[in-house]
Image (cartoon, rainbow, N blue to C red; front, side, top):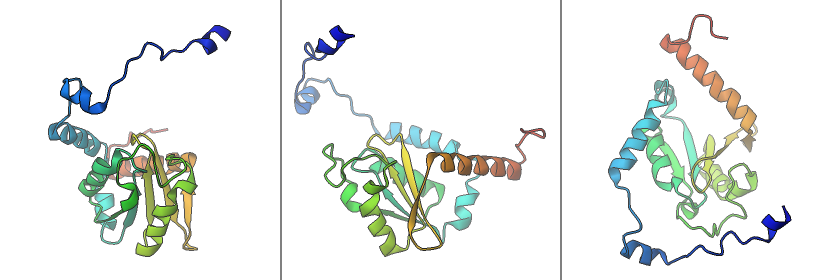
Length: 180
């Protein structure tokens, strides 16, 4: 273990400027067909998309990618699901690995949502959704009856998703008769 701490695992790693890597053909840009394939798979996960459509006229959502990659496809996915009133936090829609507007771009930390919460109050948003820089984690805040925005914990989100899945499958007739 002591030897591992002393070993510099990056010693032999070579680096180069991004532009140089592009010019040398070491970077491959994925086109719109990749985005479309991804969005198609995302849409397949919606068991009952009519749920969103049934509230779309009134539902308001603020979204922040915390300066990460979600800036492009998350709003597009929400739009395709039927969300009509989406308000991206403009100062955080710019990809920037220095994350200039947050101490930590972690959507599990409510303090990172201060700009999105400010926007949410201004537009009367029902939900605030934030994704981490590579858009594989999500944090959600919901407006309570008191008008304040409250963090939905991972456990609470799990229960809400389970309720949606069971309800949607029951409505669609795809819930097994003896579902446990």
